[in-house]
Length: 180
Image (tube, rainbow, N blue to C red; front, side, top):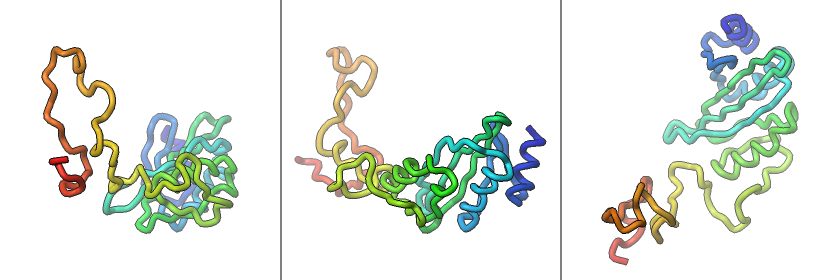
């Protein structure tokens, strides 16, 4: 894959990249996101838009990740960028299939995609508040009532003592009164 990795680095004008099987993995500055995706399509032959999503990196911001693939070449590019301000240019003009992915990422993480034709909700009810895949989103249902179903192997068959309830990760201590 060294040849493909070198082609990707040269086309995207980056010094470093990695490989993951038949994919080159490249980090791009957010201001060059749209240009890099276009280069992958037009220069590197990535004719298939596979997926796009985000990762909440906490105080560092959000990492946007897109997987682009060359069907004929049977190789691809995993393109990543780290956003400090939760906004990056839309690529729906380059890959119409990015529409759904950008809408979902906007809805679940709150990332804005300037240039997108309409970031209307896909999965959540219109009255839903917040972005459920952010690390700072409190899972209220885990606090208000026990999670349904068995939590540990053997639990629910009367053979294992139940553990003391614990506050789920990310829920502030003062969020709900323990005595309730």
